[in-house]
Length: 460
Image (cartoon, rainbow, N blue to C red):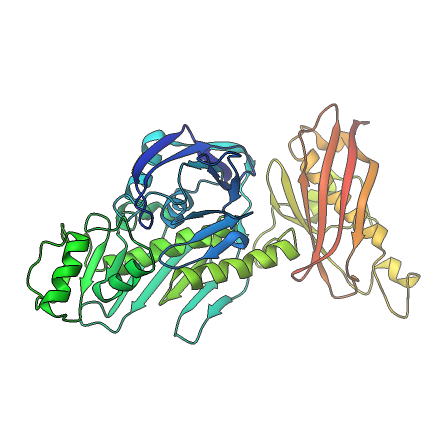
């Protein structure tokens, strides 16, 4: 299991805001475990903080806008994409304006600074959002953002515009480590035909040929083109010359598609977790990206712990024979069959429930239901493994309950169910006392949860 990461030290960048035209200073700072991405408006009296989460998205017109308690910050996607692609989990972002600086219209300078200051591992494990089944957002415009199961994060973006200059393009990212070289430097783009509307809406006051690719694909009258060229400082004089208008050539032949993929990463970072899954984005945009992120955030909030991934074809970390070396329990009271994942703070165990369990003979025999107290006992046995697996001669130790708190039973466990137990240490083990939070899952639903306090005793 990978560790959470943060910046080794802070860095700052300065530039103008794309929409406000203001001079902006932004500072990225290290943050503690489980902090996530948070944005602080240091230009306001109370220096309010906005969590970079999908439920705080308020707008998506030419950039993602976050808002909390009427405090806004916009154009956050490029900076967040750089953090996400760098596998940084925790960062405090200070900004002295209502938007991030546009810089050159890409994530290039963010990535360069992250690489310069470095990234450090933290004590706690990463908390991945593991895609276990298809999740999708679609709309009537032909936009589709799909998340599929995968062992790592990969992404594919396909764009299609009714344009003789930019029609069909695609871009892919096979691993996050490729982001810096293949995606980060790709700039945002705008069609000339959209510019007048954006200016009328009070947007892109800071937009120019140094921070965007401008696409001229529909011929205008010379007078209209001259007026637009003046507002954007376009040196081109010929209104009949269709194509890209830039101060520098395209950095990739499919730079627009690569930039759309960049935006997808930044917007999906608003899930609040690193992702294990494959993204396929067809005609993506900030609205669609953030709608999918909101959908996933809703799932996460409804169920505060995601069910661990379980592949019955994989060899377990510990089978039942190895478990018997850790725990003193024997039939009929050994209630876990295997351990499928373990770190220094978390363990996942599996119990296959059959109708032949001895407790079914007397516990609702006409409608067999696994007793709730035995679910909690199975949690405790699973938790005992995380406590004992790092100790020499674990067979000389036992773990005993000191307290059980905040127990909730959410659904029945019946014959045929496979129960997955996830136990996590809530603090360091001190003086032989371990505090754990436990969940029991059946399918993708929580069946039970509890907070356990146990004592480790050397008694043999």
